[in-house]
Amino acid sequence: MKRFIDNRNKTLPWLLGLLLPFLPAIATAQETAPVSGSGMSAVEQYIVWGLMGLEVLLLLVVVILLVVIKMMSNVLFPTSEVSPSGELVEPTKPWYQRMLTKVNDAVPVEREAEVMTTHEYDGIYELDNNLPPWWTAMFYATIAFAVVYLLYFHVFSLGSLQEEEYEQEMAQAKIEVDTYLATAGNSVDETNVTFISDIGRLDEAQKMFAQKCSACHGMAGEGGVGPNLTDTYWIHGGDVKDIFRIIKNGVPEKGMIPWKSQLSPVQMQDLSSYIITLEGTDPPNAKEPQGEPYERDEELALN
Image 1 (tube, rainbow, N blue to C red):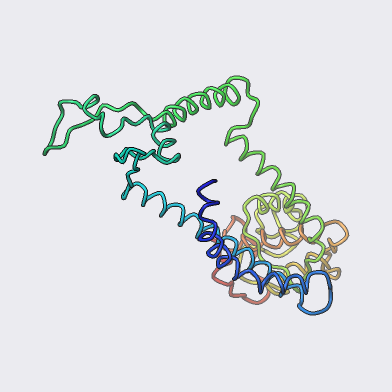
Image 2: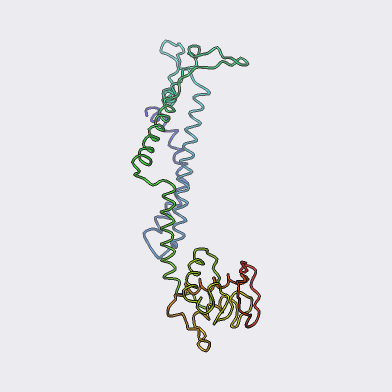
C-alpha cells in the first residue's frame, strides 16, 4: 500500500487512461436510461449497456495482464536490495511467490540437493518433492465425494440413477405429448391431416380398427360388407386426406356411419394412417378390387 501511495503520481494517469473509454458510454446511458420512450430505443439501450459490460471485461483483462507481467518481471529479473551498510542483500520475495511456494510445498532452488535422487538422465536429476497440498486435498475430496455418492445413490437410494431419471423424463414427456395432442388434436381435419409413422400410435390404431372397422372390412382389411383395404384400388380416393374424410363423414348411402362423433381428430388420423399400412399385405380371402387404382407415395409405401 505504501508503495502504491509513493507511486501514485505514476499510477493515477494510467488508471484514468483505462477509464476514458467508459466516459462516452456512461454519458449516453445517463441520458437515455431515466427517460423511457424517448431518445434511444430499448434495443439501443441494451446495446449501450452491453458495450459497457464488454469494456468492463476488457478492463479486467488488461489489469490481469499487467499483474501477470509484473509478477513475471519480478521472477525473471529480481532486484537486489542494499542494506544501510551498503551490502547487497537477498530481496524479499513477493507475497504471491511466497504463497505459491507454500501452496505447492516446493523446495527452494538452493535446497534442491536435499531432495535430489540418484535417478539421472542427460544431466538432469529427478527431485523427490512432496505432492502439492492442493493436489492432495483434491484427491481426498474425490474420495469423500465417492463415499457420499455411494451412500446417497446406491445404499440409501435417496437419489435417482440415470436409468430411473430417463424413465421419469420419458413418462413426463409422454404426459406432455398427450396433453398437447388433447389440446392441439382438434385442429386436425381433412385439409391438413398427414400420415403418421409412430409405431405406438399405429398399434393403438390397429386395436381401434379391430373394434370399429373389422365387422365390415375384415380383421386384416381383406374386405367383407365393405371394400378390400389391402389392395391399391380405392372408391373414394386413397390419399390420407381422402381416407380421413371418409372415416369422419362416413358413406351413409353405403351403410358406413360417420365416426366424427365417436372418434377424436387424432384418433381418425391414426386410423387413416393404419389403413394405409394395410396396403399390399395380401391377406387370405381378399375381396376383389373396387374403384380406381391409386399410386401411393414412396414414403408411405411401408410394405
